[in-house]
Image (cartoon, rainbow, N blue to C red; front, side, top):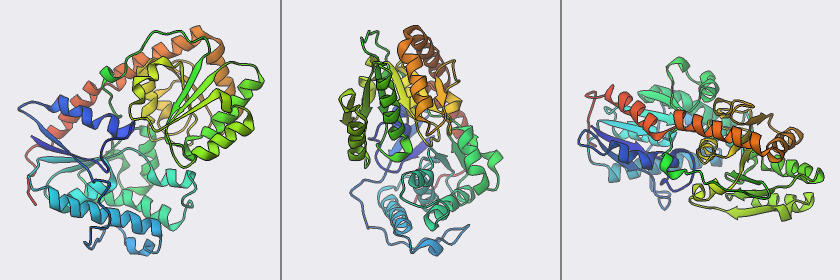
Length: 380
């Protein structure tokens, strides 16, 4: 069976789809399967000229927005690159971004196209202050869910919470499959270690949606209580300068290390003790599963798919979003009680190995792909 995994940009960022799809190829390396990965190179800009018409809504109603214009140009570019580069026929295409899914179905209309939605781009833009909730860009991006439902053969998402989020914007939410991402355990190896001072870490883009301002406020409370810690922030983004200034203003800069972008954070993640990410929104929260596989204690917020990974008090701790006091209290619990911290981490690791293994995902995907066998193979 000839498969195409259609990504958006090349899989070079840590987390999410990039933590799964490239590693799936080994699971599909047999005479029975042939898998390729396709994406839009970042150098491709402004090449597409194709006229675009959607089936379920008129996107030109939102065409005055520069964000919508940029989104549509990227879609045209993806169409242009797909027509230029793909000449082979495929038995099935699995897309991991709305633009990729719609472009593939346009170029290969008779080929089954499955679409996994990994995150809520519009929600992140709202939380990051880029667009207004209910504004034209927001309405445009929400309308894309209906277009995806109409055009693709199967919608998939990574959590039940995200299926509920999509439900008001599609006709048949009950038909959406839930399939959490999977992770190759060989990349995440717990390392026995003893840190004299507990080491906290977060891995994410430095944007408002991740709630790192709340984390710094919580750390300031820990310092006031003389609770020892070191915070490691791994990632980069537009909020970095603001967060560094905030750390200085709160008096926690000397206890905080800003690493910037790191390609493989899982290589040194096992040497930390506690993974904390007080996100304001998460479709699934892949980094929690990755941290669990490294046997770190987990502290997160009760948003999106995070509570589907963390059972409070069993394999991690959950706090409300935007609550620095509650976050400080949770962190203090796992900092001052190493035995409790270890028990949470051990249980989290066991659950992650059971529920989020790459082998499990590969088996589920093979079963799903085979259900479409023989339904179409078409060249451009």
